[in-house]
Image 1 (cartoon, helix red, strand yellow):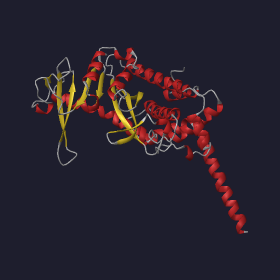
Image 2 (cartoon, helix red, strand yellow; image 1 turned 60 degrees about the vertical axis):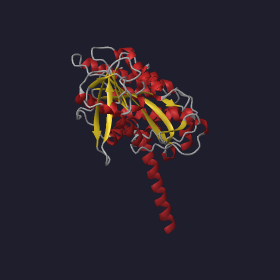
Image 3 (cartoon, helix red, strand yellow; image 1 turned 90 degrees about the vertical axis):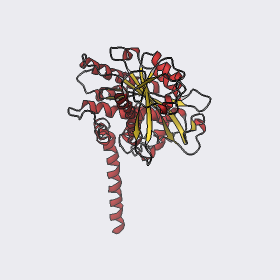
Image 4 (cartoon, helix red, strand yellow; image 1 turned 60 degrees about the horizontal axis):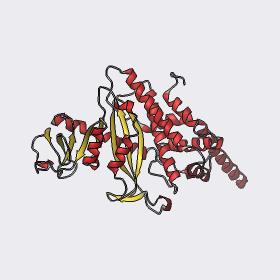
Length: 370
């Protein structure tokens, strides 16, 4: 590995090695071209260089190793994070782990996905629990689990399972990692599980959460109060913010095992929204929810390749000589840059086919007029 080579180029080269057969590599490049279109519609029927049926076989039936692809992406994410820490040994940025559930709405019948498709919070579709790592300027999708409905492990239990995939080397150091989650992960089991792993936690909570003194959170009058919620062994710091999106202001509570003070805890609690920006980007730009595959293997591969497109673009952004810190980049421009850098030949072939079609049409038009 050449350390002077751009990280995006190294990542792409390692990804290509996951496809031993030439036809799989070619199908991957065509599908990546669709993903990097940036429109959020990487539908196989939009391909011209390969037939839609060829791309469908690549996703649903082709014999290539999906786990190897995930391992390559995770290994590059780990190396990128460790490189950042080596570059800043005295001011090592804090690792923040964000977990949340996102719903991919679906209509129609998906027979093979029957145990994946459920209704949750009035949304019918597939529901993913996602673990997302943030550290300084790094934004790294790490792992996900599918929620399989009532009677199966809850989203909070799936989130604890995802935390076990984080290497122990990332959880060590003077600055303890911090986990952020919304109110769907406020259970005592989840909070205790996070604290047991040596992580600090900042989690959203319901206003009706009961305290040991029989009060509810909404009865508190001072932000930053140390209270003991029912079911927990230790005191927690509680704060809140007021949202004025509707006619009536809405009070949102946040709780942490750290005594951060009322104002600072409210500000730290807002960092959870970075995972929402990721969901918006990976859905709107890279088509995470546009899968129409009916096999579980095809759907899993679609999700992994969608996340891979995001990671490629993010690493490309890190390679840029000039970038505005703490700003969300233009993902359309980034996708075009990666597209023209790595799958330019696919674009040339697609454009040549279009030119040939135009020439044939013009020739037929001239012939008919004479």
